[in-house]
Amino acid sequence: MINPLWVSLRFPQEGLLLQSKTIKMNGIGRVLLERSKRARRLNISLKPFTGVRVAVPYGISFESAEKMAFRKATWIKRHLDKVKEVEKRLPSQMSFLR
Image (cartoon, rainbow, N blue to C red; front, top):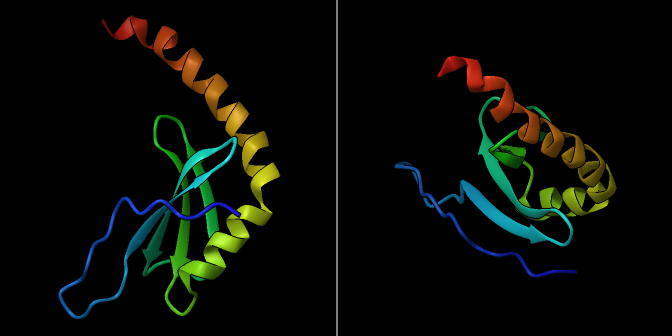
């Protein structure tokens, strides 16, 4: 298993609860694990030009979220390929805005 790469630590006003953590996964790159008040379960999202994000609800540890991300690595890779294709096509389709 790969050690997490700590990139972003934010602390809320009310306490010293870790709000986000970035890990590095082979073949995927950086994955943002981010605490979410709205999330009710672990949720993986992939967005063009933004990357991979795992919404972590309160009550679930970052360790559990990280394990889930590694279990879902093949799913993430498969869908990340689709996102990369969209990223390649988007700039050429946006030329009409100029």
